[in-house]
Image (cartoon, rainbow over all chains, first blue to last red):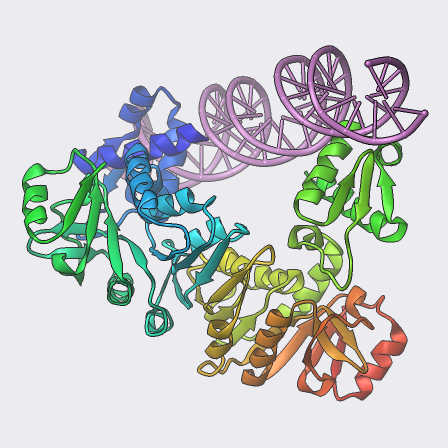
Length: 254
Length: 254
DNA sequence: ATCGTTTAAACATGAAATATGTTAAAAACC
DNA sequence: GGTTTTTAACATATTTCATGTTTAAACGAT
């Protein structure tokens, strides 16, 4: 079961480099039958990650398109683990914390599961589901329209929550961090929610692994100055990191 | 897996009559090893349904206390299936439907999964989770505080949603239906939300299996006249049903 | 303290669910 | 038309989960 996901993840990554993969090649590479690969490709095509062609698959990644949550989830898992550990340690007992959508923010939520006396606000159904039965956490879900796949809550209902809530810390996930474009996200609606959460919160901590550094996604979330801390990992492009540090942004490398 | 839940359910029901059960007795009765029963009792004690004592367990059910969701879920499953089927058939494509918390309402959500062009509003995380990836359903989650175990959303945030939303139909779950006390629920906060949903909705359909008929739970939801239709099953107490029918309430027997 | 009972932990077994492989017929491509 | 790929159905393997067994430790009562 673990292998299935790993293999499918690798197929996607392979496709990002080679434009096209053949079932016959993959079969040799992974040492599994062609039928299995066919099933893998079918599953991925179903999610819209790849496009099936006769004998293999081609990439469909046109434009700023985000991979499905499940695929992203175990990508860079060890990195996210380190980043989220640091983020979790910056949260003190008794705080009111907003936990954002996205895989890295979900990892932070996992670290906070056993903590006491926390009030957690989230617009991610996944975070809500994860923390729903923690008796020691006061969990609040923002309302909103459920965005398919991502399971994030968006829209007016979500945004309006930040007119009445003023949390201590916002754990924010992003699609890209760049010197000129600032913090961006793949989805406009999600970006709007993040923007309001930043404005309402005392401090904002962005968690983003190195794959996001230097990238620009579709929708603007905030300028660099609006965020307090960026937690990323060491492999991130040092040039960009150094420039980010000049912009009144505390950068922590996991 | 199905047997585990059934056995645990039966243990709880047994405990409601006898105050106390012994592992040695249960082992004989269910024809399973004592170790298995020990595991069952541990699981139930974990959820707070029973209290573990040396050699067995005693009931903890003081007052009007509701069993945990998981235990209730497969109780009367076939009945809920019939009731929810009827409820689902009363929903027309294009409607805006509120789906409540509780096991029977969740069963209705399951029936609506494949339907098209529905807007579904829910204050149940379980319903939200179930429908989250249905591309043909426009899913809206009310905000609110997550109630432990039940995974329902409660509080001001939840209630206020019904100041701005005016749905066509409200599929409502209840804790009890009675001639004099009307519709009641075990939880005050849930009851408040239900009350507001009834007021905001064009019509309210209560789904409740026979175990609820003639019962009164803790918190008042609504008078009989405020609800349009009650869907229950045939085994329900006929006297009560007949009286209910006199109160301008359409009763449908599954 | 001491005896019998109950529990907890570790490992073994069994059954159900899931993933993978194989085969043969159908469909698609050239 | 002949080759390759796909689909579907079934067979096999793997994994997971519930259950059982055993043993040592913990507990309660005397």
